[in-house]
Length: 183
Image (cartoon, rainbow, N blue to C red):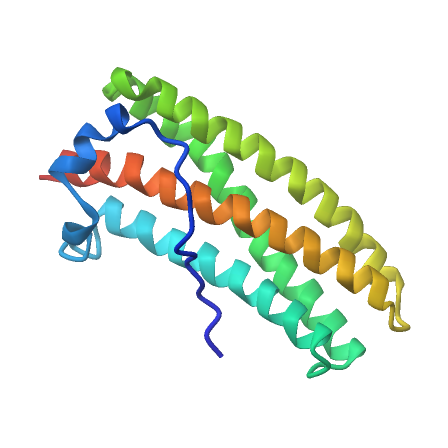
């Protein structure tokens, strides 16, 4: 099962003028970063978030395509969602409280880019609140409820679309800062 999904149709919200560090440290160089460095760690976290989102997408598709029975779908989706959304919330909290303020200070020309990332965090949080409401309903439905599963699949997919674009934008802004500071 391949649960890591990176859409190719992501449209960045970042202005090209904010990517001057990205030109110095383009994605082709990211694979050469030492695995113990903060930039590589950040990329690893994002890989984990993509994997978690991919797992939720996968479980939703498997149920909708009749390859997963309700009890397994319900149990696995609730467990995967708890892990994924907990990880996502913790990651964003750390960024909002610790990393982004320091990066804004070290690269003031990128403040508007960090505003975009901050707005994304709020949009993602709103989508998560909707998903959490649906997950709470799923916890209560021991009997199959295909309509609820459809609503969850749509909400998870919508949240994933925002998340995938956000992760790509964040990497384009943040990874060069971390990588170039380490050099």
